[in-house]
Amino acid sequence: MASIGRATIASAALALAACGGDRDPLLGTLERDRVELVAEAREPIVEIAVREGEPVAAGQLLLRLEPAAAGARLAQARALEAQAERRHAELAAGARREVLREARALRDGAAARAASEVKEFDRVEKLVADGMLSASALDRQRALRDGAAADLAAARERLAELEHGTRGEVLAQAAAALEAARAQVAELELSVERHTVRAPRAGTVDALPYELGERPVADAPVVVLLAAGRPYARVFIPEPQRASVAAGARATVRLDGSDREWQGEVRYVSSEAAFTPYYALAERERSRLAFLAEVVLTEPEAERLPTGIPVEVRLPAGP
Image (cartoon, rainbow, N blue to C red):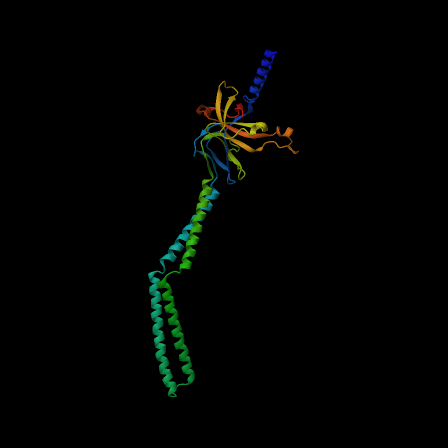
């Protein structure tokens, strides 16, 4: 009886050990980050510089769209920028010397006329007082004298305006117009640059959805890259295991066609379940939930592995 009891206890211990051992493997596929490069203008494709499956370096030319229309808008914007620059420089420099000399000459001429009309008024006033001219002659001369004085005042103000230069408010408006023109040029330069599609990072060309000469829809992907570097296993973690799995957890990965085990590390676990029943989440139904996770292969040799291979990921048992 004692031996039977010891055997029963041993069997129970083995069962508990099995429950606390490694979990069933998680099934998934080997993936890499997918980078979709879109067309920002609806223009024909004039050059495709790569082929599908070709490795590319960061900054490498992939594809070019027809830049003629954007180039014409850029040329127009540059002309407006040059016009705004010259207008600002003209206002900042103030009046030319020739204009100042002309204004001084007009002032001197107005001063001479005003002096002459004052003297003539004095003579006419004396003659009217002596009864030799009528009062109407004095009125006419008074109007001429006052008009000449007004012309002199206007000439002096015009000269003062030219000598003081452009008002600060007007100069500020010209500076703002120049900055707006420069910003427009910068925007259109960026637009022209975006007609050339370059690789934002090293990788492999996965797809070229359009052919040479086609006009892609605006914001449609024209090149799809698979990023270079170590791939990751894309798996789904069952709800009962979710609480014990976090970013940074170690894992082992087996690939179809490879006899070795690859070391990995969980880099991401979704906070939302991939499947949520429409009914209440009773305890029996919660086990149907699954959470997307990504397990990066940490060994350098993993960089050469192809994408899309089925994998099995084993996570260590939780506490």
